[in-house]
Length: 120
Image 1 (cartoon, rainbow, N blue to C red):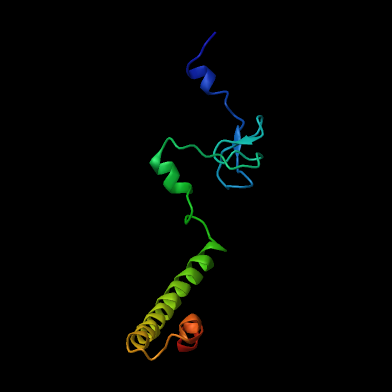
Image 2: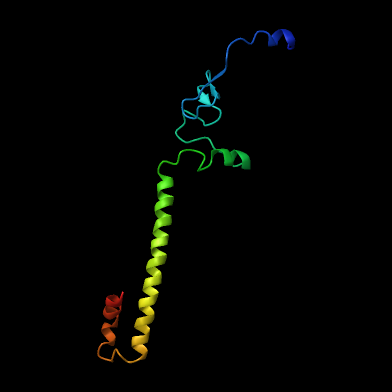
């Protein structure tokens, strides 16, 4: 029984073809599974044994149709919050000044949060 050169000449048919999910040529025809993404399994094939493999398949290597908008909106929101915080701190310092100068007397002190809200 030969295992060498004469056996290698008989390999004429293909074992792997293109995967429908990941597009790589890793879909095994007889096993009906993809060696790269694990199709037709619902969960994507993923192991934590290689940093490079993680880097190739992590978030940001694809289109990120939704996530890029989330990042953008979050960035805008933080800028807006920073501006709002600056304005609030300004009004808060004014409010503290009014308290120190006894502009707000003892009768209005329970309602001082209302006045602070108006200052904002």
